[in-house]
Image: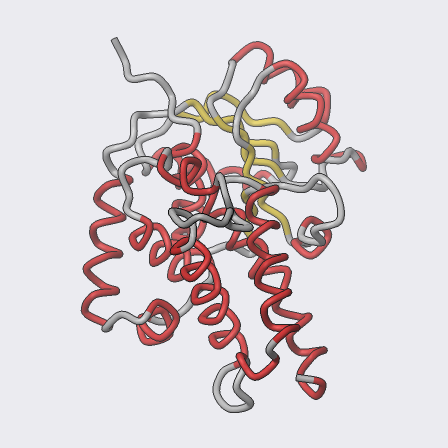
Length: 265
């Protein structure tokens, strides 16, 4: 693995993003990553020298985690003990549906690549993706706060949110506006950039928002590597600019599945 170690390092932030989104938790997603890294360090031959390295890494990640889940019911505690109950709360999507949805929509893999990663046929990948999309359409409408200083990007995000059947309860371009709107509108979810108008930090704005309300946050940023180090408190959900609408839709769906708004009376 020595010759490819630098190439592997380039892919790790995005594998970490995927792991966090999959289980709905930074802590648990990073725990997956630690176990995965320990596995490939102990057995570098898990990463074959031929083929697409990124696809190979995601495939090994899934193989390692599948083996660990298989030990959860055994006598010995799994390094991922406690993850399954969290995943069980993620809407009505099956684990495979969620994996396919994120691999295709967030990570941009082809159906062929997803089939290789998950050991499915392309037809099975398509079926699982269709089922996941239909399930997300049944989510209850949510109130969404957009924190973004670029008007055109904010409008594009708002359009996507509304096409999903949700409501934009406010759009803020700086720290003060974001905090004030969150207090007044009580959103179910926040979509935020990390760089705001006047040099404000979207990260600090979100930290202040979360002191008043407990809601999921999706960061939409052109600087994803800054928030995917695994070295500190970082986002669970993150979409890279320029984003594909499908990626944003899928991550919003995952975030709301973890923290669903109450059904209307």
